Image (cartoon, rainbow over all chains, first blue to last red; front, top):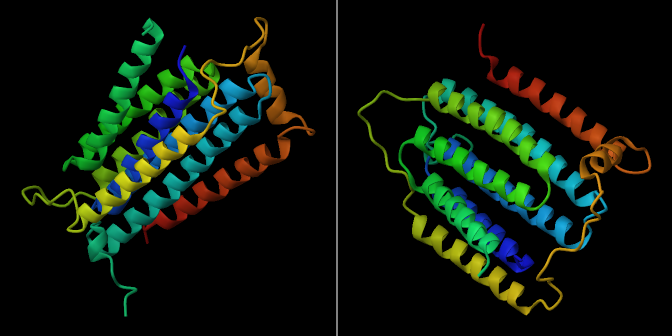
Length: 102
Length: 169
């Protein structure tokens, strides 16, 4: 059988790759893509713990479903903001969105 | 190494390779499509974990809605072709170092945990996970309130997103 630690290591690696994407990408939409990677890593973690420790109690899966819903809401708002900013500044490169700086 | 373990390693390789392509390709449409492949891999993982409903929801919501939303946003924010810009910002080595350090810390932490089971806890043969999930989501003693709050959050977020992105005079 597959040890639980394999799932947790996979989720940790996926989370780290998403973190690298958030820190290192130029385009704002690419940053949001990397945030989705991190949220999927969290979901893998939750469902793995649910299956391996308490498979008859649904709290783990409910948590994962709610994380999915929140991720959908966050992507909608984030992309709307990016599109709105693009209309004003004609750029989505994160470094060039610096109107709030002093 | 059993067949299931080989299968898991194959799916894990697909997921991690797709994730690396998501964060490194220059073309954003390609990045969104690599994300779709990664989401499929995670859906397969959910099916492997006996969370079949979650696997289907992952495909329908994440791939069918969120990834499509990403492709729409990429197409609405394109600049004129011919200007190939870099994928990574100038500080990407620091980001890579932080990511590697985080993974190292998590792996070291996991190696120190004793209580991680090597096999899944037994699920009764006639356990209807889908029915239990449905009852948990609507039962007032279980998770009806977080469910309703998540619904309100989704409505508010989508109304707000439409308003922010509307832009037509």
